[in-house]
Image (tube, rainbow, N blue to C red; front, side, top):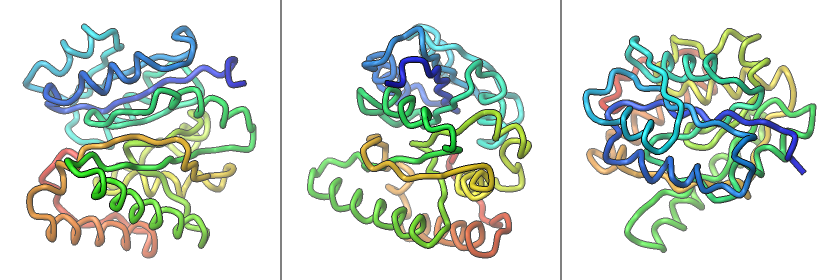
Amino acid sequence: MGKNIHVSVVIPAFNEEAYIEPTLKALQNQNYPKENYEIVVVDNNSTDNTASIALKVGAKVVREEKQGYVFTLNKGVFSATNEVIAVTDADTKVSDDWVKKIAQAFEDEKLAALTGEIRPETSSKFRTKFLAFLYNLFLSFNFSIGKPHLTGPNLAFRKSFFKQIGGLDIRFEMSPDVDLGLRLKKYGKVILRKDIWVLTSTRRWEKGRIKAFWKYGVGYFNTVWFRRPPKVDLEVYR
């Protein structure tokens, strides 16, 4: 199953030399035929060795000069060669069957997009499980009330539908992935797959947790409930 589905994995990256190599190695070690998927790293004006590390590991590297996640992911998707696009972050390690399970899911021709489980990477197994439980409960709630949205480190969609909606809405400098899922549901099913998981860095929350929680909370309510771009400044790339 899934063997005839070709997948492009897109990774937006800005100054990620300290994180990106384990991310790419996890993708290189997938239990899926290497000829059936590609890895596209989009270098967004990095001033470190992000691009050279990606090339060394065997990824395709493209460059986006407009600064920002929305421009970078758009560039990666439109540079990709396959219909099924999988997206993760440069500081995220995917499970060894991640590409395979995504490919199998898209054998369903009615599927427009999916998002998977997020497991925060912490020094405590208990805290990792607890945070994963809370976040994935939050995702499940939104899907259950008809507000399906995607989450940046672990999502996939059909490129043809992405093109039909004009790509990411560049007004959403924050929560563009959430907005994307809500827009794609008009083209087909948008689902949550808890068996498709990734382990992602919590570095965005390590400094000023209350402030970060507030920012993402404001972003969520504006994007999901008011359907307007959040006016929130982010101090980090995503």
